[in-house]
Amino acid sequence: MDFMWETFPSVSFAWWWFAYKCNKVAENRSDPEDLHLYATPREQRFRRFASLEFEGQLYMTPYDFIQAVTNDEPKCAKKWRSLSKQELNQILMETPPVWKGSSKLFRNLNDKGVISYTEYLFLLCILTKPHAGFRIAFNMFDTDGNEMVDKKEFLVLQEIFRKKNEKRERRGDEEKRAMLRLQLYGYHTSTNSVLKTEGDDLVPRSYWDTLRRSTSQALFSDLAERDGLSSSLSDTTLLVHFFGKKGKAELNFEDFYRFMDNLQTEVLEIEFLSYSNGMNTISEEDFAHILLRYTNVENTSSYLENMRCRIPEEKGITFDEFRSFFQFLNNLEDFTIAMQMYNFASRSIGQDEFKRAVYVATGVKLSPHLVNTVFKIFDVDRDDQLSYKEFIGIMKDRLNRGFRETPKYGWKEYYSCVMTVTSEHLRDLWKQFRRRDMLR
Image (cartoon, rainbow, N blue to C red; front, side):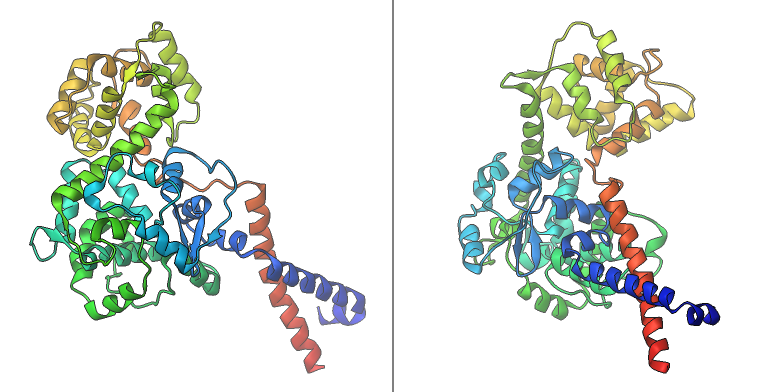
């Protein structure tokens, strides 16, 4: 090998020049594109929809959040707009208190609000949980048992979700990862944490499960360190909405429940209205389209065709029916147990049994027309029975609204990945050449 380089110096120079140019290309690449390669799918989605930046940290507006949970991609390419301290303060001053909340809160705020990455994760948790889980969530934050949650208790989710994400981080340039953490959390995280890590990576858990398991542990660990951390973080619309402009107010369960219920209702209203065109109903086909979004079903056309053939006359789905079905989906885990009993007995389930199982497991009453529509969509073999495979597996994906999304890479991402890996190897090669020249 040494003989080759000495015999053909022009080849050595060519490789040196190529490595040099690749190194310059890598240095000049835009940070947003570069950091995207180090982000998890969930972080990538937040960065795609976020439109604001303050002191290095990215934020969504309420409008951005609604778009993120009701659309696959942003309507237009996002450019992060930097907020001044004065602009941020003005936005927070216009935030209504929690007792003025409604099912139009996010729509009314529109772009006059800031939502952090950890709050984005928390709001996603709310969208997929049953009403019975609202009390559990409140009690997790209410560590002193006084039926009230203060700002310091609520801020524990910052640490819990941050640590959860650290375990999912993709390996790579630590400097890039640090920059990404600054964008998502507003500070550079350290390797020390109030949460245990040993053995946790063995079992993958949802953010809701992580929150449930980790809250008490985080709250009673290293309180002084977290007090300093929370004081350095900027206020957000959600914090001011819950705890007032001075952060001294406390949140009771009734207001907490109303906020969570209103958020679920608002997102469902937006989805429903996007298909209803001002009418009181949406078509059965539109209902099928909404259900099949965010699922792993590749050939949705077969489900839609199946439904068209079996429901020739359109009757329509009302918003009450629409909302009741998604309330049922948020209780899907309890219903799954009932379905598994039929599955163990090698039995499918008919419409009457399905309706009864839904009511017994979740307390939700579904109309006969809604149940019939669901069967016509998912009963692929047309035996008027639903199996576990035909329904539960698909609906678990839909329930998460893309929360378990898998990354989709196109040519741009592929090119960026190739350039990153190639330039790293060539930089190492270039350094070797320089050391070799210095030795000579």
